[in-house]
Image 1 (cartoon, one colour):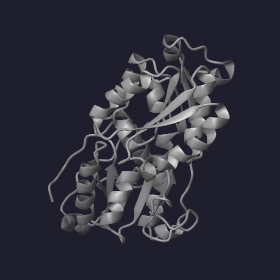
Image 2 (cartoon, rainbow, N blue to C red):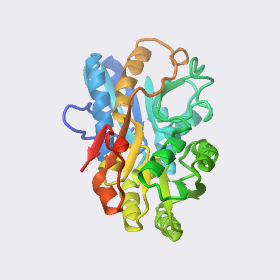
Image 3 (cartoon, helix red, strand yellow):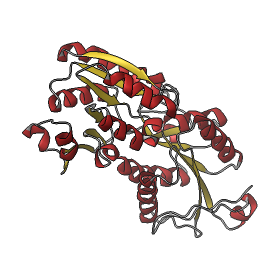
Image 4 (cartoon, rainbow, N blue to C red):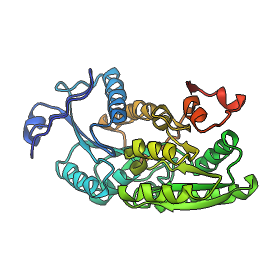
Length: 329
């Protein structure tokens, strides 16, 4: 197998994976990790660091009793499928899968190698597990958002930008749960209650993003909800810049967007999912079965508001929202 090397932040696990026979001779347990975004994305480094530290606290040390190999999907569905096949062919003891498209690709490749997932919204609807309490197969893990999140983001956006009467949900059907329907359906129900009109705004590649956002901006009083899929995450800088350019008030599901200049975000503490995944990896490597480890929901949510962006959009953020977990000035 081709050797690869990933240089992570200080203190992270090394990821050179030796030939399978060599690892077995040294008594190492081997773990593959398939991340949904690019290696160069700073957010991915924070996720890896959180996982690494948690594994060390459980006495798993690189080169001593564990060998870890990372692959980076870069938000590209084809690349993710190729890396999933590569990791499964290497026959590790366990694979950690990040995001829905990653786990879908891994599931197509194996029904026997244990898989622990993070940042998956709908593992039952995606047919990864039979149920949350008893997954029933080789997959278990940690969800990041419920379907109602889209409606919650719409409520927050309306509170910050009360003049909007139309909200567009932008997403990539190839990387969003249920092709986008998982989040669209609750927003369709909630929109009339807020006297809003909902518009679905699917994009299929990076070139679609600007044309869609320019089209949305032509209609006055339009707000934007950016769905939590890995394509949106991978292109967040572009999306944030275009929202500013076209003066579209926008709400996001991840803190990463707000700290990068997005107006407001509400969602899961993503590094915490990786910290919590480590004990499941530990338990499975020690003999427990993923089928008997329940899928767990998030325990930490963050509301972040960017007052600088609000000011640029001439929005007066209400005091209730300014009491967010984090206010960027």
